[in-house]
Image (cartoon, rainbow, N blue to C red; front, side):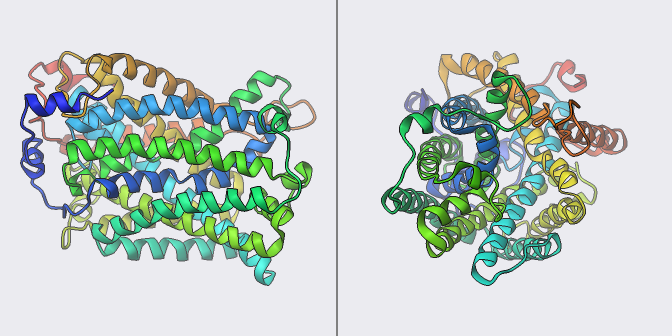
Length: 508
């Protein structure tokens, strides 16, 4: 679908740093990440061994096997449209600011401002969610190994240790991050192979194909099968987050106009395939559906491992998953810190003069701020799982709409958009339109109540979906800070001709 070869013949591609200067920024980050490393960071952030495993229990209750498997296929296909649209815009504007810079260039300062806040808070929520999930799985492993009781306080200590590890690794620079992400790719692919292979070979009993691809389960309390099936799509949509990492690392990537775009597409494609294999392997190996749903471990995949392989095999596979989650959180920390750096470079954050500083080509203070914010976001989990879920919902409810904004503006301003060497040609508007419509649909989906309690009440405090509240809070914060500090926010406008004042004054 790309017209890469035609673009190469038509226009000689500028060097990475020269093009970055044309976009309005002086290069200060170290460009030591190759094309594979750029793909690897998005693949690591998507992390099917994190998203699919953490949300598998949700899938068992919300539609069951059939919705998980077929939903994965449908959602993966739609996410590819988002990826294609985002890759095209990224090729034109390969900067660490990524989504917000693209939105500003294509729509004006306020578009960039609100996109940036949605993207930033989504990324910070992602660090909290990923690393807290890793802490939960670590607690389950320690419980099997030594009888460790995973209380909220102990899980929080594990979580903070994981955050400290990721901060330390990211302080060493992009070269180490790139190496770890490259290892992460093979760990994920090898891990899926080992898990599925063990679950296929060892157990004497497997579920039939008509169960895996046809069984519908509704433990939500809602009576409508269609509503429950639509809710079940969230497992896949939650997992397919974070592929903008390739764009955020573009200022540290060689041949960024092509490598970052390919990184986005390849990360989604390989995750789509690996995730389907993993979900199918887990579901075929279920020995006791009710026991898996109600497992005392709190982690349904762990119960599948125990039932199918015994405690020893379960512990081994849990370690595979935990290491993958650690890779995932480390990659997300890198992506979020680059967003903090870029947003501060343009004066959009409190204390911007601190967070935009670099040391040996690495935004170390931005790294520390990112993990500190993630730690604060997770603190409510000490007192209320509902409050923690509400705060981490900022991840998907913030980052998913942020993906669509630059694509929407590219479609809206199609005659002003100047494509980069990786582009969709005449398909750009069609692909972009499909992507925006899908994002609008899933954004509404994220805001719907997911469970209904017994007794006839539609929702209670425990079952209320706080995602729309989180979205409103994020937008309110962005609006308030715009009123106070928006005048100091100034993104370079050299890459896009915005001579018409309507782009500068457009209100979101």
